[in-house]
Length: 123
Image 1 (cartoon, rainbow, N blue to C red):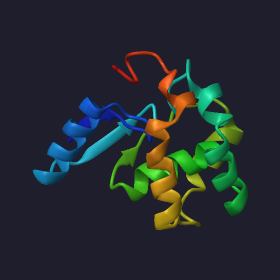
Image 2 (cartoon, rainbow, N blue to C red):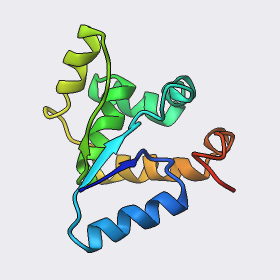
Image 3 (tube, one colour):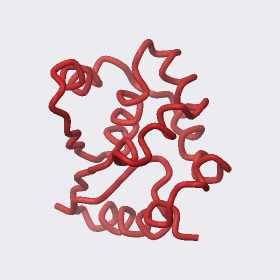
């Protein structure tokens, strides 16, 4: 098992590690699936994520967790808020389409996401 920060705008370096894990049958456990506490607000206001969330009647956080799960990662969201705990568990009653997954992966190239700090986007 390898525990990695994993979200749609993970750096190219992180994606190399994730792909290595996949290629070598190493399970991935994702943390900071929502971008971490410093970047969560930017992620939650991103139009692509808001559109996908609205289409499924889910929160942006649920969409981000579902994305990681569909990528084959186990997720470990952290919260002390009982409402968020319930939302974090309610990610198995919907599935993101291939087109939605592709839209989310394109976020790495988005100017809004490019403004994330170097630990997320090292260029």
